[in-house]
Amino acid sequence: MKYIQIGKTDLIVSRICFGCWQLSPKFWGNISLDEWNLALKKAMELGINFIDTADAYGDGFAETVLGNFLEKLGCRKNLIIATKFYWNFTDPQNRYPDTGYDYIIKECEASLKRLKTDYIDLYQIHAWDPLTKPDEVSAAMTLLKKQGKIRWVGVSNMNVHQMNMYLKYMDIECFQPLYNILDRDVEKQEFPFCLEKKIGVITYSSLARGLLTGKYKGNEKFQDSRANHPRFTGENFKKICISINNVLMPIAEKMDITVAELALRWILTHPAVTSAIVGIKKPEHIETVIRAADDILETRLWHSIASKMSSAYDK
Image 1: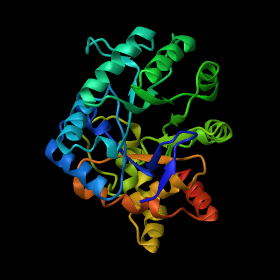
Image 2: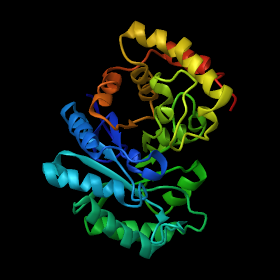
Image 3: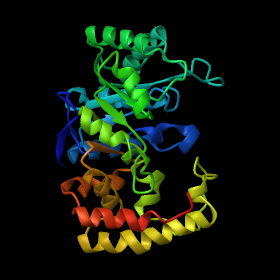
Image 4: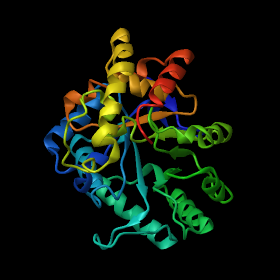
């Protein structure tokens, strides 16, 4: 495993980040917690030291499961933990965005309790709140940092304009966007901005909800959040699977890596990217992605893959 510094922080993280969105039953159904625990343990054995979660994943469930794991193994100091806030889920049936001062302070305390830790390495704003007051957010983050409850601040799902609004009041050390071979919008503005400002980047949906693992044929049916997603139904699904089979699979086979490892290596080759988040459910799955961080792709091959996959489906 290779390691890298997040932006201007003192956080040195593995280039593969263990994501926890899979612990959100609403989106992914119920998974085996025994296997999940074994998967995280295996990931740590293979050198992964970076875990990303969020308070909203399962309305606190993901943080709770992770906290139980950290307590049982006594491994908190060996890991860098990132979590997020944004959704006020006091009433699970009526979620709403909340980046108010009082809620940030309250929810940070709740996350700390669920995670069974006294500090969060990277505390991220999960999305842009149209009613946000950047000075109010900054005041809350400043207090939490002063108290030692958070170490660094990040944002997710924002554009350059929105990040600039925050930067007037506080430092942003990390940006978490949707990014993979099929989702490349952030290359236009956000990545150059992050490079200029020395802001780290950790990508989510790095394997496009499993599409870029290469295991689908185009005729599968899904029972989770992918059931009605246009990429996983009809002709789009078939076209993407054919493109993965025709473009990515031969390259992966030639390099003696999996399709998933090729897709992740493609992400990690971009100079703006710090780490790629991968959601792992079973211990055997981690072994299909771990070698992605061993190397980067040649520039010509990176562009060739991007070009050939850009016409994979109707956007």
